[in-house]
Image (cartoon, rainbow, N blue to C red; front, side):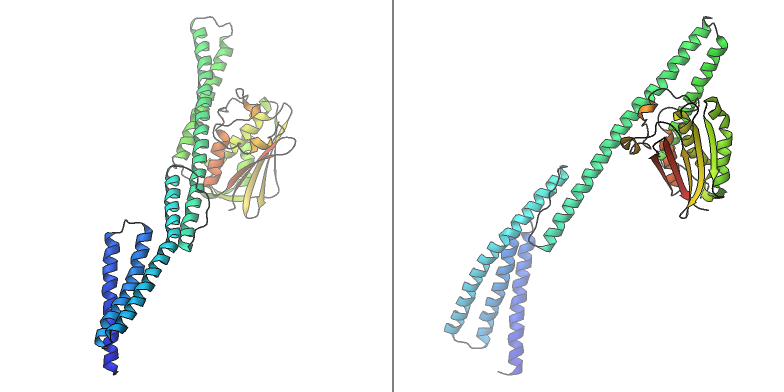
Length: 374
């Protein structure tokens, strides 16, 4: 057989296989919504028919006897039938895996958990793993949303109580003064002022928290002496602490500078300081310290109050949360009392790329504010 004849045979076989493949592709396109097993059978049949068609067409050009051609086609047909059967048998497991993936996807969409499972191919196994991972992420998101909803409900309830209590007192005192029934009008007037101050503090905290939640907190960053900032705040609140029989102390190992918004960080530190004064016993001391630490500046506020237990440490910075020792109205007049101060503090510090943490010292509580060094 000459070279051109070989090329003709190859071209004929290739053309037959290509035509068969085109028909198979068209069939699969028309049956694209058919089960996976149908697509596998079409692929196997296309391969068998491509071989059979090539044998049949080339046998004519090669002048092979009809009996030999019949034998070759018979062998091809038998082998193809067995191949299709084997393909159906083997693809049934893939089909089951595909249906199982579909059921898991439906579970995921319905909010049910998807359990890990081994699949028969790397691709299907990857899909299963992704479904399991997505299920876990969605479950965590649902848990976080549920906790946030509970926290919001508790916050609204507590704020409503904290708003109604001073409003009721203001109304009672105002009616007493209006009717001339007060035997000590000056004292009652001072009480009115204290209640109004508490309402102003609470409304201010709510406004600041709403700004933070809305992402509208803007920072005017500059390099400041954190040591001087903390020292000034301690000095400014000395009289307030003394009026509650609490001593304030300040210590710093060295001058520490930080890249912060001084106004916002001052507010964060004041919130912590007021909280410490609030929970310090009579005769107690609140210590404020500023120190450098591993590329950061740290300000710590330590009191000698009841401290935190293990469960409280996890919730100290939650909006609206108050410890068991803070269920009554605040002693310190400028404290809002709704449990928003430390939540605002954490949000401000984290907006600076820092962190806020609470610790129980065994003889009180300590809150540490960490911000970037200047």
